[in-house]
Amino acid sequence: MTTLLIGVGHPYRRDDGIGPLVAEAVAALGLEGVGVLAHHGEGTDLMARWRDHGRVVVVDATASGAEPGTMRVWDAVAAPLPAGLFPKGSHQFGLAEGIEMARLLGQLPAALTVVGVEGADFTAGTDLSPAVAAAVADAVAEVRRLLE
Image 1 (cartoon, rainbow, N blue to C red):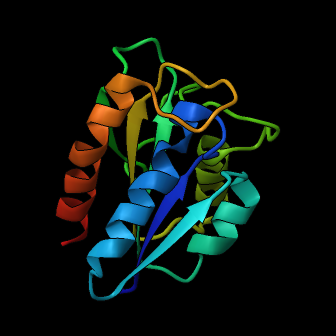
Image 2: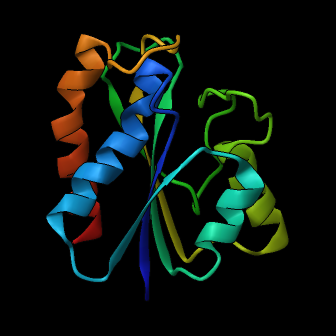
């Protein structure tokens, strides 16, 4: 079974950049058998990227109103993601929509886990808010645990 980590987000929209930042940190670990990809989050392209992988872990920012830096983990094969949780930039067909379309088409990977980190600031810029920056190490540790 091949494994893929996808860090979803935009590094120039502050806390939305946590996905690519976690992906970069995990790539630096050099985990054997794990491919790593930073991705903009458009749902149909995500479907194409995970198509040939048996196990996929996705990291993305969430915007639910929870405390910034809060990390949550979902088994996306077992149940749909909560609606409206993942911010979308210019794409209206994002991560959650891509997962549900793949489910309808029978194209979900055998294992698909989503790690969400609650963001606070999605405005233009490159710095993470303090609470989200403090959550990066925990997100990397959780992803590593999921991949090993």
